[in-house]
Amino acid sequence: MASATPRPVRDAIQVTVNGQARSLRTPPARPLLDVLRDDLELTGTKEGCSVGVCGACSILVDGRLMSACLVPVGMVAGREVTTVEGLAGPDGELSRVQRAFLECSGFQCGICTPGQVVAATALLAENPSPTADEVREYMTGNLCRCTGYYSIVRAVLSAAGTSATGDAAKEPA
Image (cartoon, rainbow, N blue to C red; front, side, top):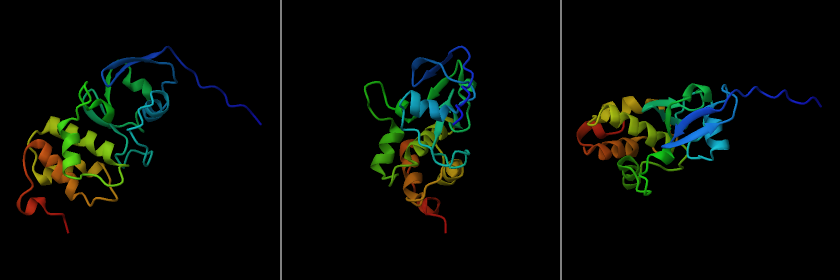
């Protein structure tokens, strides 16, 4: 059996993850998702499709929503990465989005929930008072097979301090 050729590791990659400075010794082309889950043991970020279309691995890089499965770790050198674990306060208090997902039952099996919460956080940073239609539009990159999306939209609107009223809150036919 042939041995695998080791991948080159350059100098350590400096990155801030959830507010903590990290020095990563890993090949720069390695997917950030693998580094988060395997090296840093931040398993809240899930692997779904591995091609950037399901949203399960949604993270924030300098506040921008990205798919961790598509981001080479070398691309985040010197940047701020936030995972679902980094959304809670330093004392462990849940963020308003995390609380709203719990209160509105914006989850079922939980596989997509971390990505949904991260995406909703990014949405509310960009648009603090979205309509239900704007929530649905923004969240199209986060797939869920369980909830039917109604409770997810309701949770995002609740976190925004608005309520789902009228036809805009109804599930699409």
